[in-house]
Image 1 (spheres, protein in one colour):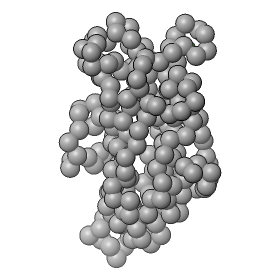
Image 2 (tube, protein in one colour; image 1 turned 180 degrees about the horizontal axis):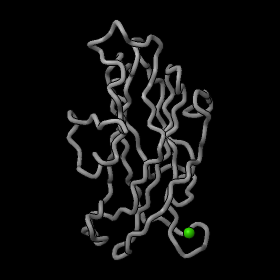
Image 3 (cartoon, rainbow, N blue to C red; image 1 turned 120 degrees about the horizontal axis):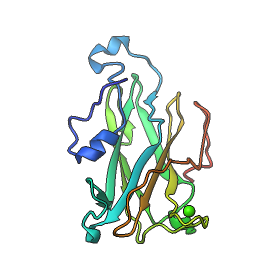
Image 4 (tube, helix red, strand yellow; image 1 turned 60 degrees about the vertical axis):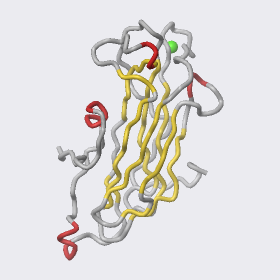
Length: 198
Ligand SMILES: [Ca+2]
């Protein structure tokens, strides 16, 4: 496994645990040995925020339950000499409780959008739905929100990077239960999909 490289970011412990594990890869101090073409260190595994509660509930989930708005920072590392330039970052896929518009997930960044070789950029994701998740498939269990963070860039290895993210806001007093992320978008490594983030 690669080491965590998040020392410069002040984040809640839970968020740190969820951070992308990025590798220093080609160290900028060894620029002469660096690979050339724009390359991004991909974060590919789904990011599951789990069950979350409103602040008003006061963490009734117990056991360190997190509240909304819930923030998470994805670090994108540029691994090679040529800068990775991010042209768009957006969400694709289903939205809160099946609503037609995305009212739950928000994205800021990356900062900076042009990532020099060996440097990182931060993408801030905020999950802040206005109401607990509904049971959309009628099995009696509220269904989580599944989205895919899409990062469009000039990276040769992942020109369209897809990071599945899921979360669920539950009502006060509801016990936390586990669920799996179901990515609404999947792409083969190296594939470019211009239709996402338009
Ligand atoms: Ca359900």
